[in-house]
Length: 341
Image (cartoon, one colour):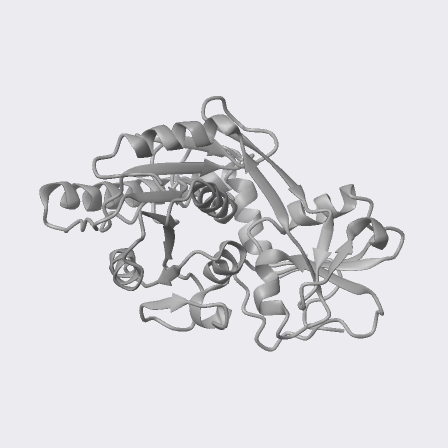
């Protein structure tokens, strides 16, 4: 049996805390005093930026930051890819920057098709593969943005994957993403899921889940693709897999959501393997004694295929409402110096 077995989840403690963040129960109340310390430190840091004691750098291209105010992931990367594809369809030269969370390197570098996801991060690797847009990673996003513009000087817009709280980089448009959890219990970390207070000033709010927890903002639809994709690009209809037990693996913030969507498409899950978000798969062995096909998320595939080349990735089709893109286009058009193709 592999290190992570049937219906396993190495992220169980984090999941318990995330469940506690949905209510103001005993655990949340015990952590509430610490949230006051966190809030004070965050406010102090923001004040230092306002006073100019900490510097904010502006680059020579409009910057769109896609982020969130809650911990635990809310679907930022699908939003980034949707925004990039929308701009590309309009003829806009767009690039992406990211910290490259979970990578084993710490330098500033471009993400290429042949880049090892462990060197650049799984999400930047996925964005580069899925959109073809230039992607740069660096610990400091301003450094990534400058490197991107130097290497790709025709770039008209830069999209930052995460970084809503990264105040060292000036931004022109902020997109705040929420999933079905909304703001949870409304408390700050570690008593609740909020990295900063909500509501806050924000240009666009997008709900990435199926059932928005609060009103306002724009919605999106999300569904699994009709086909799974093999490492060599071959497509296999999900309908052809129905009736045959499969193993489902997900190393994302909410793996259960992936498993539920597979089940809703009529697939029989003989085993589910839930791993921590950004899991690097070092030392992990694919199940080999079951004879079942292994399905994973598109994000996991960029690393998992090195360990399990026979696995199939199931892409997620994420589509913000047309009104969201109309509002984004309007905000972009209002920026000084921005010219769409």
